[in-house]
Length: 482
Image 1 (cartoon, rainbow, N blue to C red):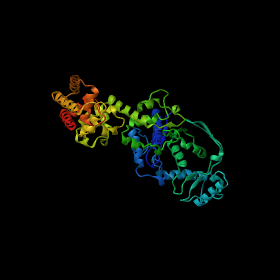
Image 2 (cartoon, rainbow, N blue to C red):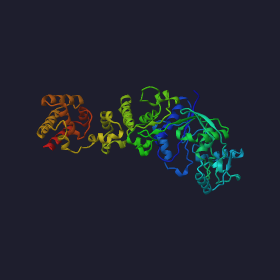
Image 3 (cartoon, helix red, strand yellow):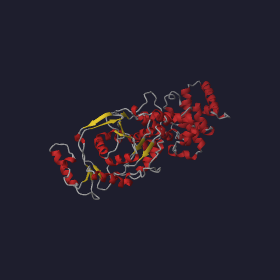
Image 4 (spheres, one colour):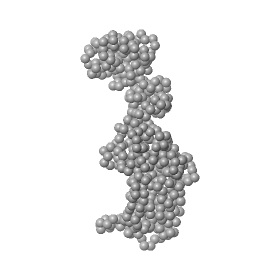
């Protein structure tokens, strides 16, 4: 396979959403599996929508996912600079070449006159096309004057690696703006120039650009440039499957998912498979497997429905996978300090790892640590009703509950070696002695030491809490019931 030169060219206009990231994953995979080049280019010519800090957010997100670029900001490369605002003179030179060849012109028409043309066409119920109002006499270009492409209406045909063979008719072509009055290029022009200068072989982007393809093809032709391969990615759809996913549908930015405790491995895995599969039933892929199995011909040509429940499931799978295959230290290193209860900072790292080691298999989000583990780091609030209303315990009298807790405290206090194995043996002896069901005795002990609706295996919980703290909580719970 030829070495692919691909690019991810986002605009720094706000948060980076799921569709943006998928449009980075596929070109990255294609470039890396062919031994090619993955370029990061910042298309910042729309200064009206520029958001401070958005470029840093783009770079942070790619690095978080492990999508390191070969050329681009902070890395450099033979085609620098990689910010379009810094390539202003390059675009102007290409536009002037088109003017000299009679394929572009300086347009002095004021905006209000253009608005008149538009309204007149609407009144006559004909499609508005600026080429129908093209000025007969055009001046020499001067700074502050837009430059427009002089289109030649015709049919175009092209092949899309996902959408197949496509074609268009002359009426969709227009005299699009190449250089705006502020001297910066439009996306329509700049991306074609940049892709040609940087040797891009595959243009991978969302299908929303398909409607503009005829104008792009006209520019390739006028500039005498070879066409790259086009790869149009179908939309990521809302959960109902009836429209393109947006924030109004509950979708969050990639950064928000990261801050909620989604692992980069899970996000990369989920988005790569959102509209692509290798023909098997496999769902869990690491980056190495994606590089081995990804291919353009397996990208589906219809929209893929976003399913946050599946993303959470996949994140849980990855939490367990990392711990089981790489160890607790690797998983611990991926956890932001913000995910732990505030009081956890008062405890040594080794203790936090012990807590993580018995709780990790219940997590779907790393941020759940804050609520799932608070009783390991601070004394829980006594909630007598939580015990009395428990479905396994409500048949027992308060006196029975108090006696069971006191007896448990006495038996456990005699343990010299406080290990999960010894704790479980003592609890099993208590079951036989009290003639209680495990659901009764163990539920009572679990609630007494945690006052939480959920906890890991009881023997492991008590081992991590420690003997002194466990006995103190049992005794306090016993006193609270009476």
